[in-house]
Amino acid sequence: MELYGKEYTVNELRRRVGNMDQIAGVRLVQLDDGNERPGRAAILHTGTGLEVTVLLDRCLDIASASFDGQAMGWRSTTGDVAPQYYEAEGIRWLRSYFGGLVTTCGLNNVGAPEEGSELTGNGLHGRIGNTPARNVKVTQEWQGDDYIISVEGTMRQTALFHENLTLTRRVHTKLGEKRFWIEDRITNEGFSETPYMLLYHCNLGWPVVDAGSELIAPSRQVAPRDDIARDGKESWNRFDGPQHGYAEKVYFHDMAADPDGFVTAAIINNGFERGDGFGAYVRYNQDALPRFTEWKMLGEQDYVVGLEPCNCGVEGKHVDEAQGLLRSLKPDESCSVTLELGAITTDDEVTQLRKASSAVTPKLVERYQDFGK
Image (cartoon, rainbow, N blue to C red; front, side, top):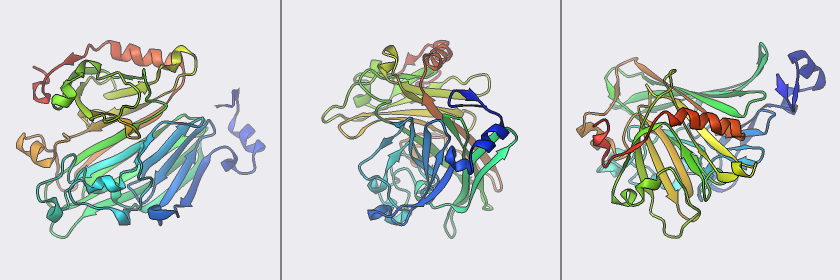
């Protein structure tokens, strides 16, 4: 394998270090400051400059990720917040929304809170992202010529007389990589067919997002959510610097998958022209996540672009249900999702992204319901 610009065999690497964590591995830590306490985290590093922080008590979501010291994801003003401080009612989910590179939304609701959420608990973006993992397992070992680094666990969302859903997640990478994978399996462990909603809030921030940054994606059609997004819709894929009083814009995308059934969406800054560019991407299987939302938020501090593959809309469970778009799982049925996230650092990578997306000509439409017309 190539490491630090040279090729090494497994034996050559093992002869050079006493413990593999000298160059790659997982470190388990306790978060102990303010309302992050008593959360737990796993920090993965691959020997190439990639570092990923996984919150074990927050659905194994990705609190932060960086490559060579450059942040890939955005962090909100709340910082990491332990699940004990979660407030389910209405939009109070925002009180513990750390942003991060990946926040999981669902499983009972995504988007706008359900009416009467103070009683149902079906507030903004659901509750799975505030659920601690059980049966946590860490792997650091050679498997053939690959040194595998992973953490996995299971979150259960259930209540007496209600849903019994589990989400088993494995976050993994390997020595020498500048990318990592999230593999999820959502299972209905109850005895009744149960609806579920799922959205991956992939939050890209500075220096990926900056004045002159660009979204590259195989978008066949793009629709603004409302009049705010409709104003300036022609620049849905272009980004400016932070703006005072900016109102968020949301766009719905109809994506074209590659021959393997995957979609890749990326944001790159304009530094590639100077030779110091940086970007990040998400790649996902479209069969499990057929819909995609872009969250364009260019405010001061709230300076983030969300790339959000999902199986649902973001206007709440009641809207999907009324439109006949709400997905469900039968008893013992499972759904599998694969996400790949990584850094973009070379012109060749940008060229490949442009080549893949150039085969698709995006069309602006007025409403999500008009996709395909």
